[in-house]
Image (cartoon, rainbow, N blue to C red; front, side, top):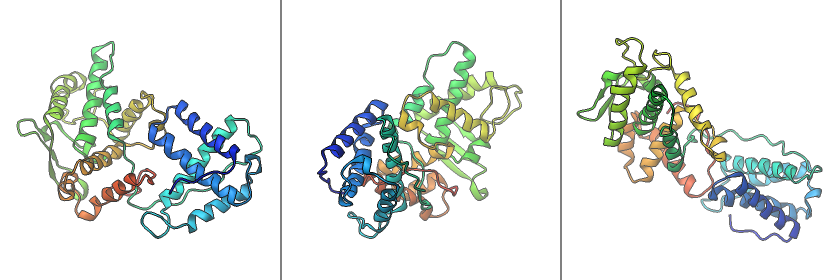
Length: 323
């Protein structure tokens, strides 16, 4: 939406203070700009309702603004606003309320708006910079060989789920015999709907996987006959919950508030690599083959997502289906 001009000096001061507060909290530059812009639209709406001071804000104004968003036209593409765009406004209002409480504006009522149901194609993704932060966690210094082996496993986990784009269940059932280092091919034997596929991986990924398989994993595994690729701290095959827990621990080590607020799982890594490949110009048909999608329509969710990111109107959450 085009930049709106606030008539109230008090509202203008609140917007600038909110922006500085987000910056102090550690939000990235894009969010520090976008979230206050959303609040500016809300404050402009309040002015149209005859409300020029924040202590005049009432619960009804939130509901009126929600109805306004539901009826407003999308200025970029026509039609109505998407549910994810409206949800982003609700989230911004909640963060703005948090800021007002920090500023001791006790008379302001809480937001109390329920977010709308998301469309099926909405998925959770991490930026390329956030992926780099995850990999950086696996390069931290530790005090023992055992901890180094666990870091090697974590880096291999990122390589399998992000670098190779495997689904959670595919990664859980991955075995060491499924990786051909000579051809740099990973064989997915237990894909969705029992379909197999071959996934190529880079030289960098090969070095990461080789170090884990031929060094770290050999020290972690309890029984040499164990064929599962991912080995737990206790020397046994890892399940999906353990892999997810490992990822969550990695996220907690990253000092990034915005990343901490995201809903991230193993499937997020798969969604992220698909989006990044599309960003880098890979044809949709090749991404479809890489991911093992039965139809191109499943892969096209990333086109929708990329369009939304470019228009800066997307809210990113996990999908309900396992694409």
